[in-house]
Amino acid sequence: MSETRFRFVCLPSALVGSPAGWARDMLDGGEVALLGAEGLEAIDRVAHELGQTAVTLVRSEATAAEQDGAVMAFAAGLPLVWVAPAFSEGVRLWAHERGPMTLLSEAAGALDDEERRRIDRFVAILGRQSE
Image 1 (spheres, rainbow, N blue to C red):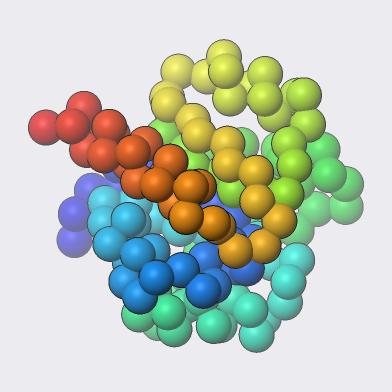
Image 2 (cartoon, rainbow, N blue to C red):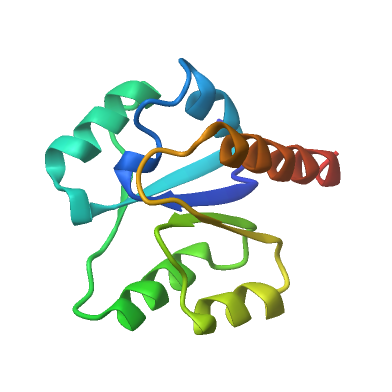
C-alpha cells in the first residue's frame, strides 16, 4: 500500500455523479474521509463507487465550529482537499496559515467540471512535490 500524500474530506454528494473512475484515480495516494450528514446510504454509495469495502468517516459534532475542528484534526500534518457548501472565516484563516497545502472547494452537491479540474491540478502539484 502506498503512503498517504494527502487527505480529501467531503460530503458523499460531492463525489456522486463524477465521471467513471475520476474519484478513484484522483485519490491515488490520497485518503478520503466522508462527512456523515447525508446518511449511511450516501456513504455506502460512494464506497461502492470508489471500490472500497471500508471508508473513513469524520465524526459528527454538535456545532459547525466543532465540526470544522474535527476536519482540521483529521487533516493533521498532511495536505488537504476539503469540499463543503461553505467555509467560515476561521476555516479560511486556518487553511491560509497552516504549513501543508490546503484546497478549500465550495460545492453544495456534486462537484462540477471546473472544480474537478481545480482539484486535479492541486493533486498533480502534490504529486510533483513528492517526487
